[in-house]
Length: 427
Image (cartoon, rainbow, N blue to C red; front, side, top):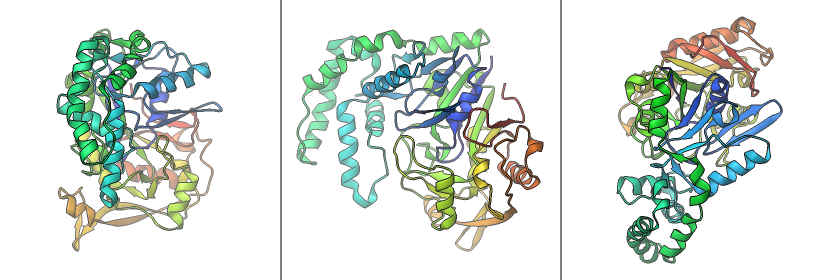
């Protein structure tokens, strides 16, 4: 019953797509369990680069069944645009399964997201404006639209009317926007029903039966640990739970069925959007990391904020996720630095703190305490084993492993599918 959770151990964009794709050939199911098209995975296969936003990365692996779980929010227009793009490139998408309990991102959710963020001005959260947060809010407020509602026009109409009763009041009276017509939304959503039908099923039943049959199921988080709604740098977070516990609720499997939890760590640190970032760089080093690492959001198109590796965050991710392994990515980006700073603790009000502060105020004021590690200049993209790495690169990996609290079982040394060093098997 091998069930693995694979998630970001920082603020997202750590390279989960590459890790998922690496495992894809050995995995029977790959499941997205939270988030929506605010996530972005880049997977390089040969000379082909694929940018995925809503679909599980396993859709690129022949023989693997990709699943969108009940914890995901789905924008049908984005879904079919992504499927069409893959089909045009010869990728078979026919095995995709979508939970009937997944919630639909409606046009009014997108409108509310954009106008709300614009209204916040300097206090904005840095959302992608794709309707993710408002859709999850509707879910919690019990006025959400689920995929299965598209197959009962009466229920769908009632739910849309109920949602718009409040939202139109807000849009017209507070934001000075036009009201949204119920029949227009219902008509648009019903237009997706027939196209969605071949994919919609009881994914909870499918996945639990697969585990009972000793199939390998990989649960893929959409964002990073520090963006978790409960455990991240609130309020600068996403609206769901990308941490390991979210896999259980977002896919409908019990915690006793999870056998490994793999955290993806970038060899340095990045984040997109607003919020605290203790190791953020505003100098030539930061610009070099951004340029060499190609640090631009797959979904947002925004430049990522860049900084040195933060071991405090890595230890926190190990703790809240129960990580059993790390996959370290983009080690090759650090080639060329004589010395590489690593944040080993914070200084807050003159005191050294080695764990993530509980207080949001303290975290905002945290200053990194660095330890300098020797760098390397050799090209490592051709390394096939750990011993192929330069001694200083090996020492850097071992230091990060010791500081982070879980073994580093794989290392990315380049963007390609085959540019990975496997130290320990994840299966």
